[in-house]
Each structure stands twice: as structure tokens, then as C-alpha cells.
Image 1 (cartoon, rainbow, N blue to C red):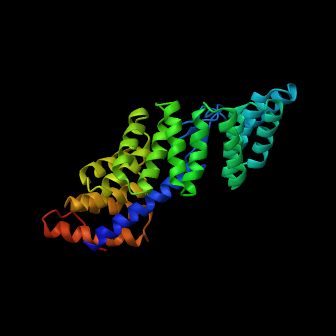
Image 2 (cartoon, one colour):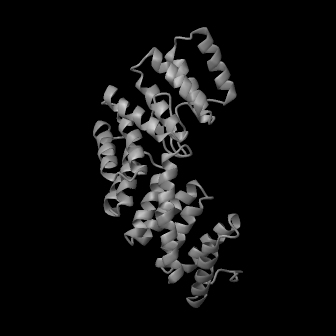
Image 3 (cartoon, one colour):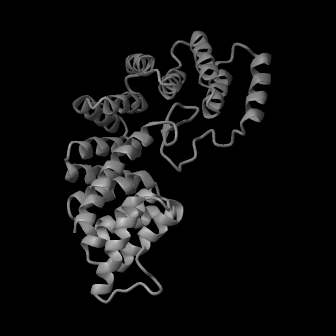
Length: 298
């Protein structure tokens, strides 16, 4: 079952990539209160409409240049548009007016991070924990940088602190689970992903991550179910289809595995891993009487 083993390695590697994506702009947003948001979850400022909102906020700022809230909101709009220099300038202006505006400080740290300045981001997050020690978002923001640096002890400490401050903070559980997963502590990882999912049902990142850990724990039925839920949310998820195919191969469900490989090849026709997995799945399906109607190896 060489192809299956290779697929598992692929899925495990993709889990690390997903962890990185969750930490970056595509998967973590910032709301007006500075709180990160998971992929697929609308940020509190989701009603913003690009340039229209920037223009309207600019009018408000011109009318009252001393309003730090408007500057913070425009900074968020700039950040969502990928205009990080402008976002950082607005967050900095808001902080000059109100040095204790911890949401703006967190937002500036996230803007620095998205712009690739991890040192400046860490400086903001360190300051944030000092001026707002009871603000759980501060520890998640800093913990994500520790996780990226593979300083896992520091990351777990920060995520655990966030959970202690807010036991109903799904992102903190999710991020701590990713650290446990990276350390090979999959039982602990699944426990944290369970909490994240129970607090925010329908979030695909913790479902996918739990599937990866269940696969590593050889809980193949549970893994297939987790990846299946991700596919229901996002039918185009190649990573989830790889994961479900691997789980189904372990379960001897070759027909189902072949179907997932087919779906991958529809969007990535040159994916060699999917072609190899599909060839093995079709051969074994035929040998066991699970032939997929109309299918031929290729």
C-alpha cells in the first residue's frame, strides 16, 4: 500500500501548510476590536466594501481628525485591501491619539505581520500583553508568531493563557491544537480541536486539522468523517479530498477513495500523487468487486 503511505505523508505535510495559512492573512482576519477570525468566518467589519468604505471613513476622519476609532476602522479597511503601509499609518495615528487603544495596537501588529515584518509585529504584541494583560487576543496574536518560529513551549503558554482568560475562545483552542499536532501529540490536539469545533460549529480549519490528527492516530472512520465535513463546507478542498481518500484506503473503501482522487484531478489534472492514488484505488476496487462504474485507470 505504498501509494496510501505516500498519501498520508502528503496529507500530514499539507496540515503544516494549512497551519501556516490559518496564521496568515487568508485565514485570520482582524475585526474592529482587534480579534482574529478564522477562515470562512466573517469579521465584524465584513460589511466594508473596499474603496467605498475607505472613502466614507476618510470623510469622517477629515471631519474629526482626533477620532481614533475612525482611524482604526480605516486601518482595518486598508489592511483588508492589502494596503498595509496605509493601514499601519492609520493604526499608528490612532495610537498617538490614544496610547492605550489596545485593539488598534493588535491590529497594527497583525498588519506588520501580514506585511512580513515579524519583528515589528512581535514588538506590538509584547507591548499589548503589557498594556492589556487581560485581553486574550493579545496572547493568541503573539502565540501564533511563536508557533511559526516553532517555539512550541512559548506558543502553548500563550494559547493556554488566552483560554484561561476566555474559555470560549475557539481560535485559542484551534491554535493550541495545531501546536500539539506539530509536536506529534495528536490526542491532545484532537481534544483542543473538539473544543474549537464545539464553540464554533462549521469552521473548516479545525475540522481539517482534527482529521489530520485522527488519521495519524489511525482513527480512519473519524478522519474520513472530518474530511467529509470539510468537503461539505468547501467542495473544492483538495487537501480534504486527499485526506478522505487516504482514510478510505485504510478502511478498504477503494471506490470512495477513487472518487475523491477523480475530483482532485478535475481541478489539478497534473497532480501526480492523485493519479497514483487513483490508479491504486481503481485496481484494488476492481479486485475487491468495488468497481466504479465507467471508470478506467489512467
